[in-house]
Amino acid sequence: LDPRDSANIRVYDVLVTGGLLSATSSHQLLLLWLLSASSVGRREYRASRNLSIACFPIVVGLITGGWYAFHKSRKWLIICLLCREGLMLCAAALAFLRNRPRAAVRKSLHTFCGPLALISAVFAVAYLLIFFGEESGVCLALTAMLIALGGAPDVIRLSLRRDCNYWLLRA
Image 1 (cartoon, rainbow, N blue to C red):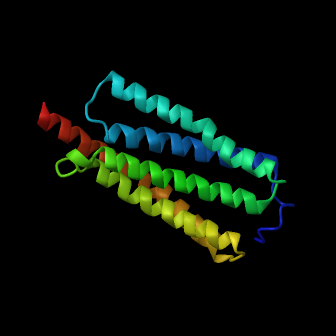
Image 2: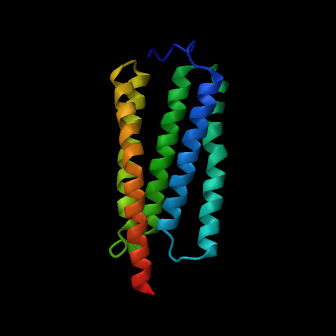
């Protein structure tokens, strides 16, 4: 768990990690942008889809490129993972600000942004602990992963249900 130890990291591991994190980031951005949209339609969906598609290579490049560019060091891989969590926190804040005029009535974004911001913050703390050589960071990251993967379907379902109810009441 020493951040200076990079002998155990393989290219395959970094590519799989980068791909999976990119996929989750893309889906999170798609939902964030759709839930913060001012209307429902093809234009909003296309904009959200394009944003999430553009996010995929950015996060893959951030994780794999950052790791490779900085001499295949675990230290730099952790810094790149921290940057990914920072990007997700910024995206949640931007979506929340975009939805601000409708926030009192439309609760779907609160339902999604709250857990997303909390899990991103926990991952950031876990990565910092790993960066400084604390073994408890790995336990925290794995626990956060279990909570995120176990709770994500319910959070997404509840967010989409609240969003559908909002639009049905407006129609």
